[in-house]
Every structure is written in structure tokens, then in C-alpha cells.
Length: 464
View 1 (cartoon, rainbow, N blue to C red):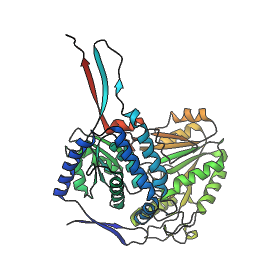
View 2: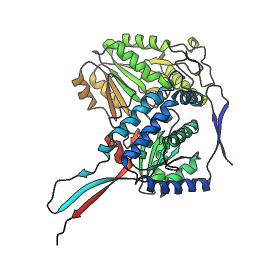
View 3: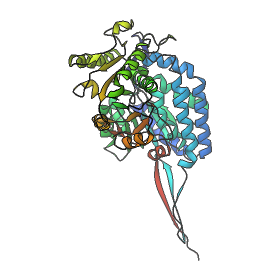
View 4: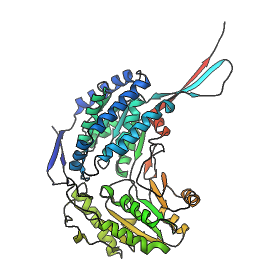
């Protein structure tokens, strides 16, 4: 018997122990999913949508309890954790349910005498969702709810750091009246994850995680003709123009860099500021960052919790120390944050200046509460630096000139381009990335395309 253990970053204790599924259990889950999906796809769309809506309501009703579980599992302050359910999760799920009739409707083609022709969207079958720990509900809802609404069955593998999330999903779907085994979850080893991806009973894989993990998923899926969506890393940039509202820009960007202890694939990690407003922007950003309260995430006054594990915090400490050794200036003294302790997940936030692209902190994903800020002398320099990255998930500009934002956005290699905001997913827009940030598309009407396959109906009318 193999046991998966979850270590809480709050106090280092073993929080959850779960048995990893073995071969017979995995086989049974896959067989049950295929059987259940055949029945579920025959359920009328309005009924499927109604079940999904009841599921969302069941999750919302338990948001506080779910939030406290998240705080223990991955360290987000409890003052924010329930909002993962109440805001982003519920907003995305409800939007995808609302647009389902339009997104899944038959696609007509031009009339042709003697023929009836249309394209119908069929569910792909069983969707395998592999969710990360940093936003375990926000990432997984992007595939799970629309997959269920589209008539698929779903198999969820949650991160070993947040295993209770899968159990919350299952309980809410039961409460909503979803037929048994249309949704299932398994705790799996890495080797068994790859086996499931390669199984012919899986119709589609939705993965959120590291670039290395994405390569493994793609490799396992490539042995078959199953689709895979990969939402991977980010090194998301921002550009503050001279005409920006600096108060708004600093507040948004510091939050975009520090929220969730910087552990967001679309968090802001590097900021380029017009030299004319650089000094003032840095002063504002440092002052805002100094106001964070680092500490136990279960306390209501805490605004910055621990990172997910000590090794993650040590990685970030290493990037900061290396950058300072190369000439960067660290503007915050960790001693101002009493909870900051080496060799623990508790890490003080940091603002770095005098940085450049020789430094790992400006090139490699940090995934921590750190932002590097560079002065730029022109729009062209800002564009060049923003694109100087292997990643392309989101990027943002702060300006009062919408035409300039569109013009510059057309030149940025990214999946989403923001003006005067960051670190947010609008469910009406496609969520996608370029370069090492992955491939595929979730949310919006387009998000249903990867969870269905087209079937053409070509009907010739013959009269006697």
C-alpha cells in the first residue's frame, strides 16, 4: 500500500494521508467512467446544465470551510482563501453553464437544395483533469464544469498538496444529483498518471502545472491521438507608461506580484517603467509591499502566508541572493517581517531594482513574492524586454491611451494582454498561452471546442 502524505506549510505537520490508487482501482474507474458517460451524454443539455448549477451552489455554500482547508493545505491567508470559490470559481462556472446552449448548438451551413447539412458537437468521452496546488479550484473548474455540461465524464487527479479539493468536488457533485461515476477522482503516482494519459479510454487531458510536467503529459499523450491542453508556467511582464495613473498602477502591480505569495502562473514577476516616472513608481511599490503582514495564514490579520514548502521558499531566496550578488538592490529588509525565517516556507516579500536580463530573477520563473523593476527609455525597449522570455501567458500595460495599448499589445508575444489590470481571468475571453506557457484554450465559447469533437451531418433527400 502506497500512502501519499500532505505536509502543511503552516506548521510542517502531516495534514492528510491518502492511499494511492492501484491498478485494479484505476481500471475500475476508467471502465465506470466510460459506461457512465454513455448514459450522461444522452441526458438533455438543460438537465446537465441544471446539475452543474446546483454543483456550483453546493460549493458556494461551503466556501468558508473550503477556504480554511486551502489555508492548511497550501498556505493562502484565510481572509482570502474562500474567495477562490466565491469569485473566480463561481464566475467561471456560471459563465460556462450560461453559454453552453450557444457553444454546443449545431453549426448550420449555407442551404443546398436537396440536402440537410450541419455540424454537431459531440463530447470527447472521458476528460482527465490534472490540477495544481496553487489555485486548485480556479484551474480545474476551467475544464471540469464545461466538460460535464458538454456530456463528458471527468476523472480528476488533484495535486498531492491539495488532495481534499478532489473530495470537495465529489461531495458537491453528489449533492447536485450528478449520476454516480460521471465524476470521479483518483490519488495517483506520477507513473500511473502517465499510464492513465496513455489509456485509450481517455478522450482529452487538461493539465495545469510546470513546463517539465507539460512535456511529460505531451509525451504520454503523443502515443495516441487524444487531445491535451497544457497550461504551464509564466514570467509575466508589465509596462508602466509615463501617462499611467501611478497610484492605481502600483497598487495593482504589487497585488499582482504578491498575492498568494506570488505563487500564480499569471502573477506579475517583472515590471518595466518609463524612466520619467520610475523613481516615484518604485517608491510607491516599496511602500505598499512594506505593509504586508507575513504570518500564520489562519490569523485574520495575515495578508501574506507561507509559500507552499520550504524548498520553494529556498529557491526564491536563492534567486534574490544571486541577483543582489550581481548588482541588484533589495529594497525591503526581511527583518521588518518577524515571521520570515530561513529554512522555513515563511518568506518576506521583496522589491528588486537595478536588475537586468542577465539575472535569473528576470528570466526564469520565480513563483514567489518578488518583483524586479527596470527603467526603460522607450516603447520599443519595453516591447523588446517584455518579449525576451521563453514564456507568454499574460502581459499588461498601464496607460490612459487605449490606442497605444492596442498597438503595443499587437507586438507582445502573449496569450492575454491587459490594460490597467493583471492577474485575472475573464471567462468570456479565451485563456491560452504561447511559447513555454503551453497550448490549448480554456474558457469562453472557444473553451468548449477542446472538450467536444465535430461531427458532420450530410443528409441527401431523395423523393420517390
